[in-house]
Image (cartoon, rainbow, N blue to C red; front, side, top):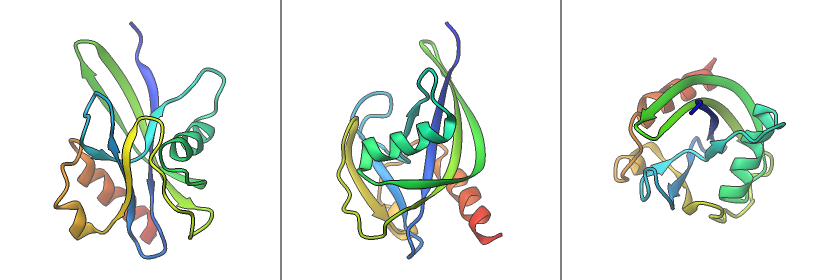
Length: 134
């Protein structure tokens, strides 16, 4: 089997909160992570980012710079995940969990500490925030 390309998007609102979804399906079901998923055949990476955020949260976003890439492997999967920074196009769009997301929320850094997060989320979140400060 070949590796699959996937994307994740660290979306920040004007107050500095980050948009997270609670995963509704395996892998990592029940854990909180950034919106994202597989890149479809013939789809650009930026289009995949926008589509995944819209499908999982109902939010339309612009896509900014690449934060980092992550490789996840287990006996049955091999993903290469490109993580980007994003920004909402409208600040007042209500969130609606959809697709494979059980919930979607804007969270402060303090609120993040009370949630079960996917492995490695906090260091990449710190990288994403540092890109915003530049």
